[in-house]
Image 1 (cartoon, rainbow, N blue to C red):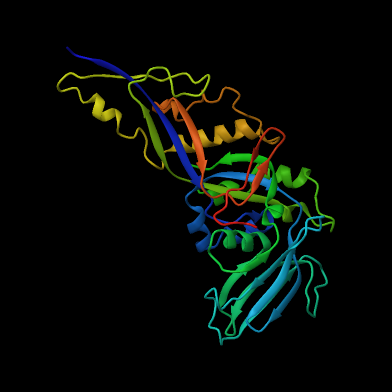
Image 2: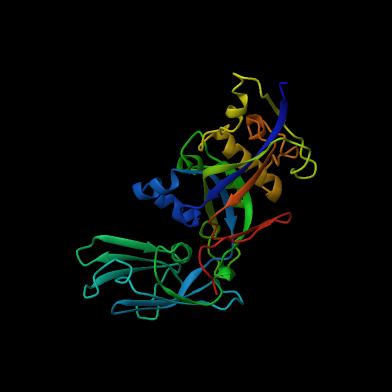
Length: 329
């Protein structure tokens, strides 16, 4: 007797950040660098976000050690940081390097300690560029275990962002997609600065980018009506036990490639529908019934697993908490 089976597939999409959060101002300079492009190339989802300006204060540069506070001028206690370039491979322990300090104010400090510092760059004494750190860049690299440093304080106080817009860039490189982006220009024009230093919004408006790096499947076979979220409409796959019928074996093969456009389309629609950012005109009210998403590839429902996210993202309708690699306390 030939038996007939029905089954259902679910998909969990994996994503993570590959690059620090950068301000719109910084992005204009960084996007042309080859190293930046290499890190951004896998990214197909982007958030345009904002928080009060974060900057370095009380910066002191001593022999082999750079110490500073990270603050945003709010009631949040500052993060007290201690960083040794030689421990992190930027130079030898007995080697002198030059630290260039970039300020937010027109008249920079000429003596230590330095205040209102936007970033600092490291150079060898023969002017070879060694590294660049903004506050968010420093925090991201610390949390990603790229650098070793001592940080005292609650880092999550400095990782909260309002989400203005969510978009995708699949058919073109993300740096090209964001260049001259009309929504970005609207946000830069219309959003007020949140900081108390009367600086321009481009220093606060920032970009966070996600790379989709694969997926995993869950198979419900035989499907008995259980195992789906409430309201999920099952997409049924049928096959038989008949000799020569390879539909059963084919069913257990992935329906999509790991870099398929359907994954990006699904994640964009899912996130926009959850967050409903005010600058997104289309909020995918019929999600998950969208064109070109994972249901189009035969998956009944999708979940998103973000493996590294150096920010708490929020709108009035949704909050995505920070996902870190190390203890922040």
